[in-house]
Image 1 (cartoon, rainbow, N blue to C red):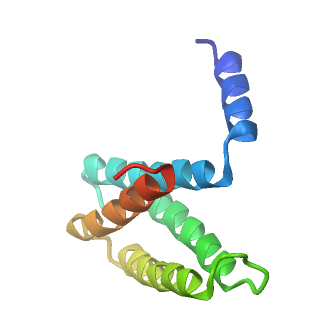
Image 2 (cartoon, rainbow, N blue to C red; image 1 turned 90 degrees about the vertical axis):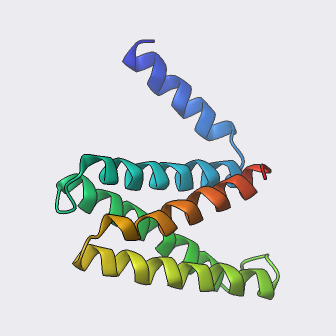
Length: 122
């Protein structure tokens, strides 16, 4: 498939996907970036830095949305999202200061498990 065809397909997929699907896809993208960083075998590489930054930005958005007063989700759901977000953000920040690949696994699993739940997969 040509680059322009792939870009067109991605644009259409994004405009027709539900917000849950977009969130799931983005969580999987973050998990894959973290996994790719582990596979690079250099905890101080630019790839590792970018993967952690992407994960941090994503979870900052989730936390912000969970705290938004106009969020339609029940308060208990919002609180659970906020709690997970705070955990992920603190772990990501710690890894940005001292990247240790064995500590990436929980973040990858959280991202993949939540993505599966959003997608309706067990």
